[in-house]
Length: 178
Image 1 (spheres, rainbow, N blue to C red):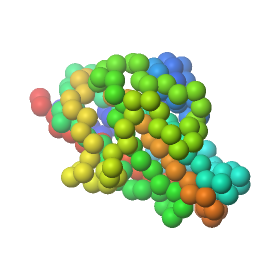
Image 2 (cartoon, helix red, strand yellow):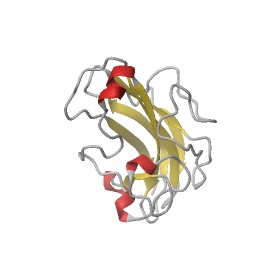
Image 3 (tube, rainbow, N blue to C red):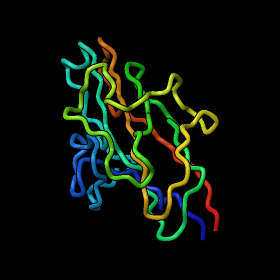
């Protein structure tokens, strides 16, 4: 049986027992059930934008893992892209792969969710936003039960308008060789 979409999980970083999005700042992948980032859950990665943040603008970072939860099969030629940018016109999402190898549990770590406009050390945001499978970031092969760390950056423009239920979607694809 090939790898199913339910075998590919997004998980928080921040330690094996982390279940909190705001603590997903790099380091080890969360391995507890509460560390799985669930689709269609409000604030599952970033909190609401505060009034001062919408006035001044803000940049926030999260380190998450793409986890191949299949017991035996490798996800080959894996890639990731932003299938849907935020629905608000006043912010945007960017993604980057962490420089650590596939399977490593030592992603770059930051001490604060907001690094201002600076990028965490070792992270390189692509010059263009990967918004389709044709422009996706190439991950490579993720073996069974292994993972790859990545970073998500949310940039809120200064003077952003209030927006309810803002969301975005990331998509992973790959092949199964059985």
